[in-house]
Length: 592
Image (cartoon, rainbow, N blue to C red; front, side, top):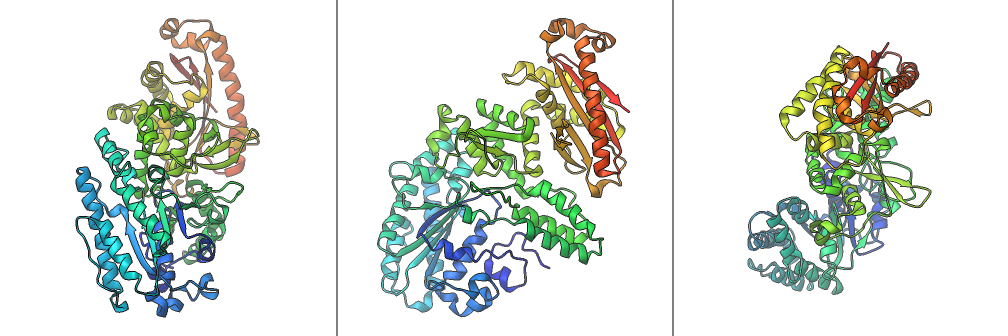
C-alpha cells in the first residue's frame, strides 16, 4: 500500500495506486449551490478536495474520466456536469505577503496573471480568442479572459485555495503587517476589488461556479460587501467528513499493516488506541457524534508503521507544529492567557454561547473585541479546539481534540509561564527524576521556588489544585515516551495526572506515574504567607489541613493505582500525592 503523504494531486493518487478514502460521493451534494466557502484547519486535506473538483469538472480531462474516477462512487453515478468546465485555480499561499502594500498587490497580480497564462496554455486547443494579460492590473486580465471564454460553450469553474493566507501570515505579526492587511481588504483594497470582480463575473455566468477553501472566515468578513454570495458549508453535517478519516477507514489500514508486519491481531487494537488518542477527536458539525481523524497525521503514522513495522518516535508531525504560532498570538492577549490556562484545567473544555462564523481584522486588531467567544472561536477554526456538543443551558462546548494538540498547549503555557529557556531546562531535568528515578523532591522544589513566583506575580484567576496540576503537567509532559492523560476517568472517578508508558516504549527503564494533587489555602491553614515560607519541613507536614489532604490523596492514589494495574496489567507505577500550601510551599508523599 502506498500512502500519499504530502501529495494533493487527485489524479496522481487515484491512477498510481495510492491509498484514498473515497469522498467523490460528496460531489453531487456540492452541486446544490454555485459559490461555496469550505473551512478546515491546516493540513486537513482541503487542497485534495480542490484537486478532486478540478479533475472531475475539467473539460480537457473528459477522455480520462474512467481512468481517474472509474472505480470511485462518482464514477459509477456521474452527474450531468462532469467534464463541462474550464478550470481556473488560484492558490493564495503562493502570494508573497512581505514587503509594502504595493509589493503585495503586485505579487497578487503576478500570481493571478501567471494562472491565467497557464490556463491559456493548457486550453490552447480550444481556440480561445486572444487574451490580454495586464501585468499592472490583474482585474483587466480577468475581464479579458472572461470576454474570451464567452466565445466558447464552456463556463469557468473558479477554485481558490487558502483564500485567507493574507490574514494567516500577516495578522500574526507586528503592527505594520496588520496595517498592510487592513489596506488590502478595506475601502478599495485589492482583495475587496478582486472579489467584487469575481462576484460580477458570477452574475454573468462566466464564473459559473466558485469553490473557496481557507482556515478561518476572517477575510470573508472583511470583504463582505465585495463578495457576499458564498454559501458557508463548513458547519453542515453532510460535509463533516469531506476532509479527514473515519474510524472504520483507519482500522482497515491498520489491520492491513499489522498483517503485512506479521504481528498478532491484537496489535490492531493497540495501534488504533494510540492513533485515537493522538489524532482523533475532530467534529465540525452540530448534531453529530462521529469524530474524525486528522488525515495528514494519519498518513504520517501509516507510512512509518508500514515501512518500519513500528510506531513513529514522535507522534506529532513537525509540519503541524507551526500551529503553535496561533497559540502564541492568543497568549499575547491578556484574556487569551486565561483561556490557555483554562483549557489546561479539568476536562480541557471551554464553554461559549456560539462559534463566531464571521470576524474580521477590526476584531483581531481591537482588544475590546477579543472577548472569550472570539478567542475560543479563533482557536476552533485553527483546529486547536473542536466541537464537543452542547451543555444543558444550550452553550457550545469546545474541547482539545487530542493529545497532539494538547502537547501544543502544554508547550505554549510552559513558555508563557517560564519564558527563560534555562528555567525550562531546569524544570525538565527535575521532571526526569520523577519518571526515570521515581523521585519527586526536585520537581516539588522547582515548582515551589520558580513556578509559584510566576503565579503570584501574574493576574491568573486560579489558585487551587488545578493550578498546581498545570505547573506539574507542563514540566512532566512527554508524549514521546508516554500517553499523557490529565483527568483520566477511572471507575467513574478522576485521577489528576497519569503517565502511562507508550506500548512501544516499555523496553525503556522508566516508570509509569500517577499523581494526585491537593491544595490548601493559607486562610484554611491559619498561617500567613511569610510564616509558611519560614516553616521547617517537619512542621509543614504537621499542619492539620496538610496532613488531612495528604491522607485523603493517599486513599485516592491507592484506589486509582489498583484500577490502573487492573486495566493495563504490566505497569511499573510510581504513585505520589502532592499538596501545596497556597503559592508558598509544596510537600508530597510517595505511596507504596
